[in-house]
Length: 192
Image (cartoon, rainbow, N blue to C red; front, side, top):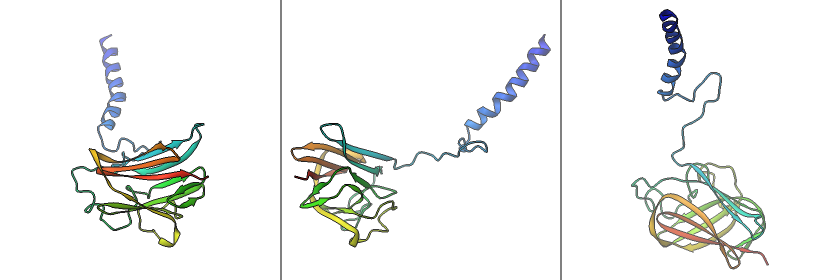
């Protein structure tokens, strides 16, 4: 009887032990019989969605969320006066599900890349026809469909990760973009 328990313990341990060791390695997701998943991105992708009064989607922003991590952000990591992808990794994309006004320009429904040019006291927000691009390396001014300049505001609390959210306004929605110690408000108005 003892021999049977001993054999079961050895046999059972040899089956369980490899699985325990595999979990301790950094290659846990690598498997010849399955997918090789990447680790969590340090600037994970997020979405901000604005819905209308009937719960229909009006606008959506897809962006990556870099972290402050005790770095000097504006004027250093994100230089003033240069075109920025408005996040990390792939350039930020905005989809309009209906025609909307940005500044004095009507923007047709569709998907655009949203670039910014940060400055100390104001940002230029750019909607551009180039899509599915990484960074701002393929930015071309001739593909701009709209530009609006908005004032920079001081955030009452630090914002560790780049954040975006929509809030309803009297005539549409405002897109808030905040990071570190500041934020901007970008107005989108309904077309009359």
